[in-house]
Image (tube, rainbow, N blue to C red; front, side, top):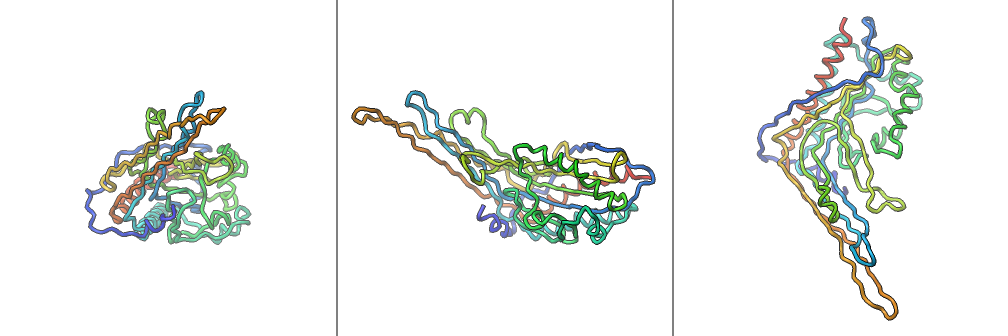
Length: 357
C-alpha cells in the first residue's frame, strides 16, 4: 500500500486493447417511505456525490497450526497482490466532474431547482459540520481505492469525513450504524430543515478484483487468489487487519455500495428510496484478464529426542506473490464515465417519473 499513490501517477500511452463494452445490467429500488405527492417540492439539495475507483488489491489467507499427537504442519500465510499501472488520476477527476455536471444539467432541464450549500449550512442538521468542497482526489480509507469528489461539488460533512473520507468498514454489529441513521432521521431530517426539499445521496464504485481461492485448495493450506473483472456495482472487500491483539491472519471487511438515494419530507409523509444495481455493469476491453495466486501448505513439524523428552518444532511460513497490470489511462477513465452514466441516467429517469405532474 505504500506505493499506492505512486502507482496512480503513471500514465501509459499507446497500450492497445479493444474498445470498451458494457454488459446488460439490472437496477432495483427499495422503498422505505411513501411515494412523492403530485405537488411535492422540486427543490433539490445534493448532499453527497462520491466515487470510489479500485487501483490496488491484496488477498491474504491464513491457516492456523494443525497438530495431532505432535505431528502436522505449522501455521501458514499466503498473500497475493495485484495493482494497476497506467491509471491517470487527472483523467478520472475529469470524468467524475463530467458525470456530476451532466446530472446537474439534467436536473435543471427537467424542472428541478438546485439548492446551494449556504442554505444547507444554516440548518440544525449541519450545525456541527464543516465544508467539504471538490475537487477531492485521495487515497480512500477503504483499502485499495481512490476517492474522487467532483470539482463543482460544495457540501458539508463531519470533520472526520471531510478530512479522511467515510470508512465502510463493517463492525461487529454493522446494522447498528444504519439503525442510528434511521433513529436520527437521516436525510429526511435534513429535508425537513430545507422546507421538504429532495435530498440526493449518490455513490459510485468501479472495481476490478475478485479475490479468494477455492475451498478445496484451502483445505490443503493457505491459498490467496486475485483475478480481474472490471465492473460498476457493489463491492465487498477484505484487507489484512490493521493490528491489535490476536490480529494475525485476521481481516477487516468493507462494504462499498453503488446507489442513488432519495429522501424528502419527514414523519408519516416521508419519501425515502434507494436505487441500486441488482446486476453489476461489467466493462470489457479495458483490463486484460489476469490472475495472481499464492499457495502455502505450511512447514511440516520436526521431531527430535532431547534426553528424557521429545521436542516438536513448528516453523511458520509466509508466501507472497505480487503483480502489476498495465492499463490505458484514457480507456480506464472512459469506462468509469460510460458505466456511471448508464446507472445515473437510469436513476434520473426513475426520479423524473416519480415527480412528474
